[in-house]
Length: 248
Image 1: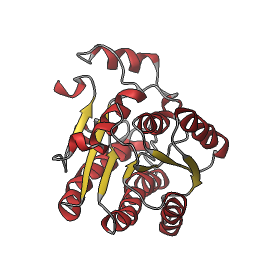
Image 2 (image 1 turned 90 degrees about the vertical axis):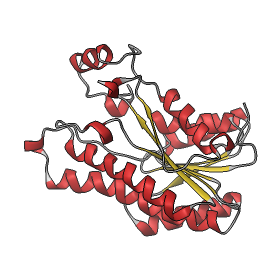
Image 3 (image 1 turned 60 degrees about the vertical axis):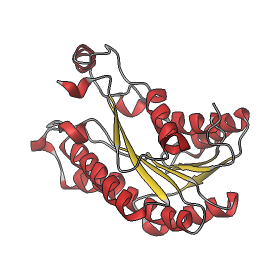
Image 4 (image 1 turned 120 degrees about the vertical axis):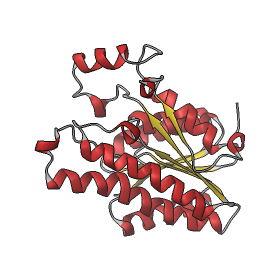
């Protein structure tokens, strides 16, 4: 399926895990891809090579989404490389797995700096470019815990609840030219989640009606739908990709 042919997509935090899967899925849908990374240029360049092997163009762009000037510079480099931005996927994120009592001020601040402030800076900067062209689509990555809460990762859960709320606010502000939606995946076994115990995995799987974990590709498929014209009348929405976990 080629739903994004001729489109330009920026994916933040795309050097690994879910971000990588999103970049590759959008490339398979025909989009040229800007791969944002923070520190690991080697991995980002490897994803670029995978995108080019599929067919579209790709460029790796270092930027710290916590810093507005870094974000503005990244957006300008996307425009310089490709001429515009049609799709933004705010995937960059951090999580500190720790109970409420052990949540530090440093970890709280860093979680919100990346997951909320970074998403806001990037969305606002990209929306200016989209609004001056033919519009576009912004897709934010939240989490099931943005709905459910998690006492073992409170800052992360609270930040993802903020992402869901920001999605609604931006959809109201930027329509009709720009659609803004969100995907909230369940636990996904990536290297970011390498700390998760086998006990947690067993409990998560047994509590999921579809009896498996989410894959990066599950989230990428939902992102591709929301980025495409198949979702032309969808904005301000959050799709839970959790195998039914949140039904309990």
